Image (tube, rainbow, N blue to C red; front, side, top):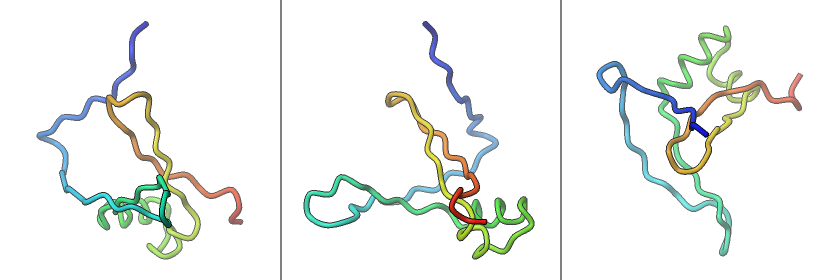
Length: 81
């Protein structure tokens, strides 16, 4: 069985590091991390929206399988019309 991998050419990418933060109260396992504003601005433009409209209408979806890496995509929220 082979693993599908997302291959990124580091010479054609931007890299920005962000700290991880615990979210919620004592005992919570949820971790938060910021998303670069340039990424949100680009996605808003692609969807012909302002940044505020994009944030209101989309959600971040993390796709992962094991610990080899994570892919982030945005999808329209189902509870927003």
